[in-house]
Length: 254
Image (cartoon, rainbow, N blue to C red):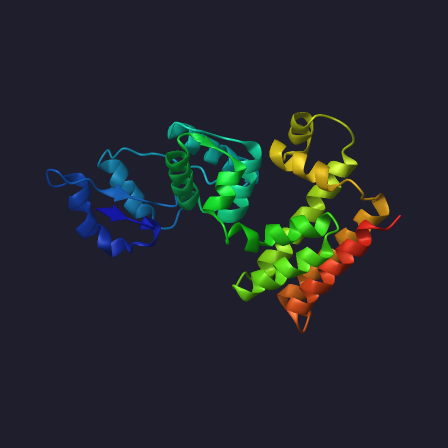
């Protein structure tokens, strides 16, 4: 029996739940998932008094932590994954750890152990191409036409305006941070900037052709876009199109 979001269980329900935790029926396992905060603490204390096995799971908030999680999942399933394949996988799947774990296991099973970028793209064909990150990757290298096509496709399949705007902002900021960090290996820069090496490598490649003036302009574009997609603009889709065009123009500024 799995009790999800146990922090939302009402205190009165603990009188019913208590006996199940203290002396579960033979052959039965009770799993309690709790956020760990003060809310619903009575359930957590009840499980601890029953001497339940407690497994702490720290919330993963940074991209590099999720990347390490995926690598560990791939390894635990007997495989390995390249850095570029990992980047595409995370862009395609997102931040849901359960989905990332499931996809990692499936890819290892299908590949025989060696997960590469071509396999990830084939596995997520039609999905990775419509994320906000796909729009961002095209926009920051100056490919405004393909970026606008990707944007319209993403909007047509329901990718939220805010998600695309966040991806554009992340792309521009990543390029700006790596561009301004100076020289160094991707691993040195990753440690200094607090970014995963694969992201440093990608941003470094995307940063070719940018100038300081252009990056300043692009940062202003994504800052304005953030407000536009959250209500400042009458038409958030048009605001996104304008932002993609302006990022392309900024890349050519000297």
